[in-house]
Length: 266
Image (cartoon, rainbow, N blue to C red; front, side, top):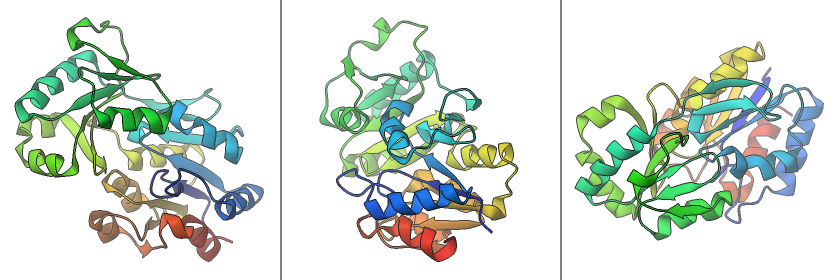
């Protein structure tokens, strides 16, 4: 029997209007009634997922969330933190130099804002999705105590396709690099990803990997899809995500998450 369901947000639980369908909401409530843990696992900051936590009423003592692609894993009420591994101003500065060498846009996320050295449409996509402000300014002027959670190269998908092979080897060795969307390439602490995040929650709740279902659609979901007893990729998932999945469900526009819940749990 499955005891924990971890779900990616964008492209998975959310439709293209960034909404949770009534069918998905109803099925998730049924899981809660059965005592099955539902975990939202996302690249978003906590503030960017909070409206959905409220909508799904995931505020019980044993409800947890994976945010920033695993850089922060905590209870939804904020009382228990299982992992918190932000980056640093130093990381932002050194990756900024790399971005200049590769001629690609960059920004960094704090807990409450998006920092960028230059205005660009891709940063505003991030801001709009998560409903957090953009702060434009010189990196050298940022207070050294600022908590940088993750850094991202953000640009046209073709530009990112072109520069990814050119990223220096030392960067690949130092950071966990994940493509979370066609326009987003994320840099995280080497020891974190969604798979680590979900595994920590399972351990905290006394649940084995074989009792976990993870559903996602992108490269940043691969670690948790591989970790789970049942790893699921959406029909709209990338080929890489599909290649490691045990099951391919319907798309996010076709209630693929609800299909998994009904087929394998309910």
